[in-house]
Amino acid sequence: MERTVVMIDGNYLRIEARKHHLEYFDHSKFASDLISKLNEETNKTYKLVRIYYYDAPPLLNEEKLDEREINFAKKRQGFLDKLDQLPYFEVKLGRIQYKGRDKNGRLITAQKGVDVKMAIDLIEFADQRITDVIVLITGDSDLIPAIRVAKNKGVNVLLCTFFTKQSSLVNELVKSADFHFLLKSDLFTPYK
Image 1 (cartoon, rainbow, N blue to C red):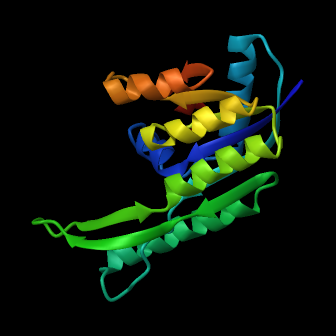
Image 2 (image 1 turned 90 degrees about the vertical axis):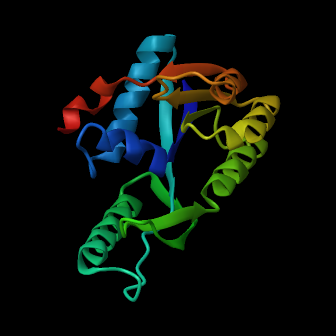
Image 3 (image 1 turned 120 degrees about the horizontal axis):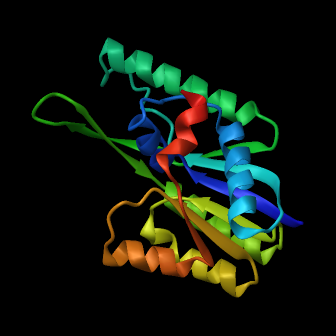
């Protein structure tokens, strides 16, 4: 039985979930279901130890937001607070930066520091041998160096993505992991 940590890039998973008309769903069950699928796919036994969820908080600066955006931000913050209270679940937040509005008046923001937190944890978990396996749900190629360091320290890295298009960066990200598991839309079916 291999001790397994799941690291979720919250923005990446949220974008994919929205394609299936899901905004908020049971992330703990999602991670457990994913581990079950990985056990079947790889003929191994992964024991889920902890789930880390990386994201940025919503922008809550009421001077810059309209009423609908304020309500959305409060709902998102409530969701993050609930996630952080789940057993064996830890939310790690970067920060959000206000960038202005586009020509249609839509809010423009950028996440800052989220991928850095993920990279540091990848290396730290491997260095301290906190886990045998890291299941990484992301599409961020900035994590390639940290994935390689974790592997060099003896931790297996299983990359889970929703990629439908291939590019040189996608291929490099996939090649950097020990195993690539292509997530399919049916993974969201139980939450609809």
